[in-house]
Length: 111
Image 1 (cartoon, rainbow, N blue to C red):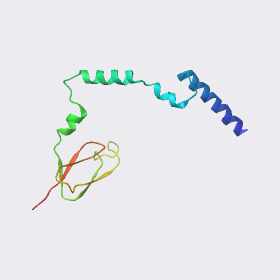
Image 2: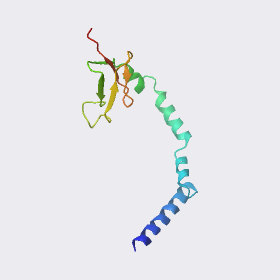
Image 3: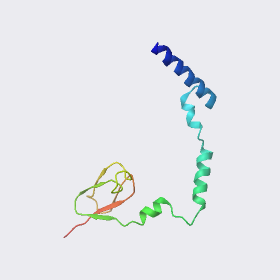
Image 4: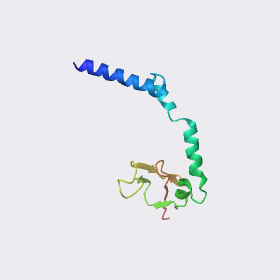
């Protein structure tokens, strides 16, 4: 009985995909959001030049000085607002950048 239900569900899913995309190929689902939609959304967002982009805002934050060689970046003190922990090595002279939030860290040498 369960096999019949799965086959029936698969048939329904295949029919739905054909209706949406004109094809039963699941790879064609990526065409639902085409480049025109993405381009127009980006253009609309970039129209307001009075607002700074997220990258401009994060670049205004000065590099965070830490004493250790390794720093754990969580993006925010509140775990609900942060990102997965990224451990960043600070062996180089230039600031290291968190790949999730863009915060920069530099080791504070006390010599």
